Image 1 (cartoon, one colour):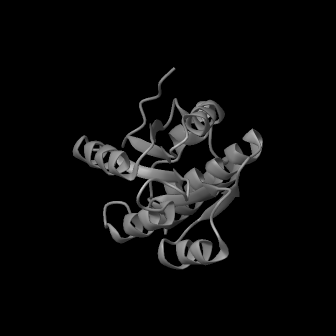
Image 2: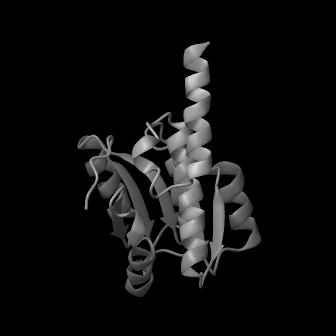
Length: 170
């Protein structure tokens, strides 16, 4: 049951281990009717995916990124992502067992990292973080929250609807 949510929003999962990407897709399945879930194993593929999505009118809502990747680190990718105007508003989550304190601090300070998840994760904990991050994205981007009530945080979305109505009535 695909919903007709506009604009098309992307959850990008970047990890060089196929088993991790499979687990992310499995654990994020409840979101796939509302968000396009894409998996990539390299930063080059991630950039191609983002360019393609942008050209098709989509927008990056959430990036879930491992730290240790071929060539460039996930932290470097998230920092660069934050510096790109088209993707700066995207929520950024580092999912890793390998990032040291220095890399984590760099991601927090320069990529405006929104959350850090240690591997291995608990599926329900991952979904809770993703739900919270996507809810924040929808509210901050002033996207109509009504279509997302079944999947995102209803209390936060209802508050956003109420605030918007109060501002409209004023």
